Length: 264
Image (cartoon, rainbow, N blue to C red):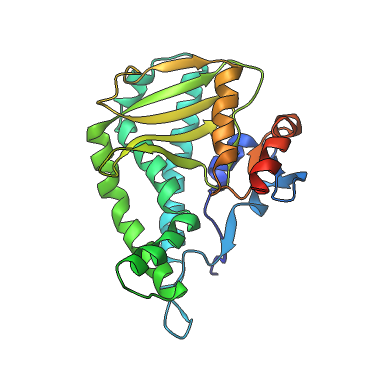
């Protein structure tokens, strides 16, 4: 049976922000509600290619591809969080079993599989003088991004280092419907900093090796001030349709900030 409810933020990731598969969500109306991870961050048939007349072709091909990747990523992410929780060496973990490559590919996949990125393809075509329909641009984006995943990941593996921020404050990191973000680029448009909140306690940084600010494979403890700063970036990112946390109190802390962004 075909899967129509297709999560662009996988449930294996969202469960890190949930208790018994239930999380708290701050939506565009400013309401904080408890939701199951199954009921958020999905669109019907979001990864389906369609013909000119709207018929689906190669049903569930990309949904199955992402599902297979998630089966690989889930135990890996669980082990990474366990390694960080027990204060074991991040570097020792990353050099084993191609774990560094796996973490980078997971981050890239979280970016490329999001429909927000799909929507940018139509505008890119228009700038080149090509008028694609929404369906055509979606097809192009799905095919292009799927082919880009491995190559971009390999490039970042050569040029970027991994740093983890460890939250030692009483305030959780939050995440959103667009959890992986490019924080900055250079003059050529290449990514210099990318981030992914891994859990309420950990945020992963992917940083250009030319930037000397952090030591490669380091775990950096951060306080409430830094957690607030990065949560504000997530809330300020208009690609996020809602903000997600494991508890209501964290979201209430940022509710006014979220409503100001919404009303801009």
